[in-house]
Length: 70
Image (cartoon, one colour):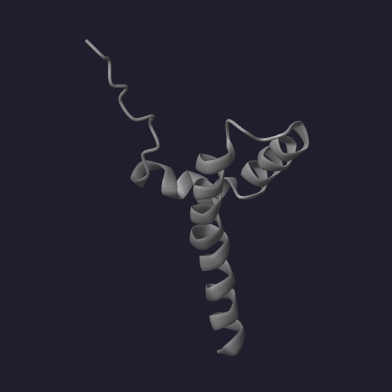
């Protein structure tokens, strides 16, 4: 029973918790990251791709509308 709970907890972390934190990290740092950091971002997206794919229908990170001065 303990092993089943451990598998459930680890799968929840891998599929939900870390990808949600990764989305927030990517949103904050995408346009100001160095080349090394950008390579690390690509690695994280590749590594946590199943979780990112599960969360993608529920998250919306489109840019905000620009205000045009008249």
